[in-house]
Image (cartoon, rainbow, N blue to C red):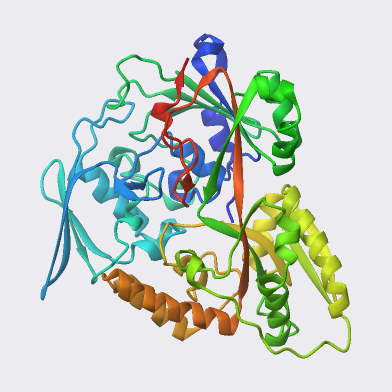
Amino acid sequence: MRTCIGVIFFLTMMVNLFSTPYSKEDVLKIGINTFPISLNPVYCTSETSQAVINKVFDSLFYFDNKGRITGGLVENHYLKSNNKGTEILIELKKKSFFPGGKELEAEDVVQTVRLLQNRAFKYPYFSDIRFIKGIEKIDRYRLKMRLNGKVATWKNYLTFKILNSREIKNAVPETFRDRILSGTGPYRIKTVNDPSKIILELNRLYSHLPGDKSMYRFIEYIVISYTQLAPLKLINNEIDICELQPENVDAYRNIEKWQRQFRILKYKKFGYTYLVFNLRNSAITGNVRNLFYNLLINGDFPDRFLRGRGERVTTPFLLLNSKIKPVRFETTPLEKTIRFKILTNAESKLRKEFVLFLRSELKSSNILLEPVFLEYHSFLHYLKKGRYDMAISGFVLDIDYDMKDIFYSDAYFNYANFQCLEMDVILNRGLKEMDRQKREQIYMKAHNIWLKELPLIPLFNLYYYVGVSKKVAVPLQTYDLVGGAGDFLFNIRQWKMK
């Protein structure tokens, strides 16, 4: 999905780590499973990329720890809709600074939007900002957006990161992807050592620094390629925070040494693990997809596999999940064995286990699955190019009904190659409906279209666990629910040294 960080990027960022000595107490060390695909906020679609840039950049709006949309860089906003159209007036917070000393102004927002809307830069979420018809600066801290019409989720779509207008003034699309940019967030990127480490340094001009100066001066993101080593690295003080695998969490309950060294925090991501079909393959008929639905949605197979590690998902439109009851399709048994290659990310032990579990379950239905386990970047490339029959992957989504990123005909994450004009029309209607009850009715229709076509089948929403060293002060409120633009350590200002 993303090209690798280039040689120019590497050479530019190889700053001497030890040019400024600092004590271990000044550093928060965070373990990550893979090196970020990109550190340019325009192209950060992976979770690890988002986790890093969320410390460096701010956005106009963001989702709080309960999944509610709230103001970030926005001080006030006003929505005006009449016969002439819909406008949003935005007033920015003052005294938000980039590390070089430049204060955030309306011009930065204007230039950011214009870059994202420039097709040459290939912004992955371009469809999300089509609703902005025009944008202009009113004065230093105020700007106006003219919309193409009513958009219920306009705040959700203004969660992209705001860039420094001086840095992007003469940006060239061919080289922009590898650029390291600065933001108004609490940290700046200091060192990039691909593929093992990224170091962030505190932005001393950040306007929300606590008065007691207890924020970590540096954050080190350290790649742990073998996830089972995470508990050992926590015990040995090689890292302070790291996401843990479910089997590590099960072991934690019985190992006193682990309990003395670190604690475990639980949260959920607004998304799901899913099975996607390559609809280009004529052998994956509606009957085959219905067979999978009956097994995965109606049967007890997911519960037997999960064993309390997550929750079942019955519809891809997650906010409808509690209201949807599964149906049972009439299907025709397969007389001959059909073989399908099924892909997944080799670095996810749980997904690998699921593929093997699924292969065993489907033998009696004359479906033989041939697992293909790929390195993460190769896996994404195969998905994007349609080089698969079926695949097990996962989405982390904006906290809303809208699933346009997945189901719209030309959506970036429409790996199934699902083409349905009726779905496109319904999704567009859902975005324009401002009344919440009417919106829900529209997305119920979208659910029914999905149920008829089944380009993918949502499986479950896993519980996620983070191990935190007991030498780290955990804030009173951590993130219970993380959406597509967030991460568990989003409120990094509250993660302070003891």
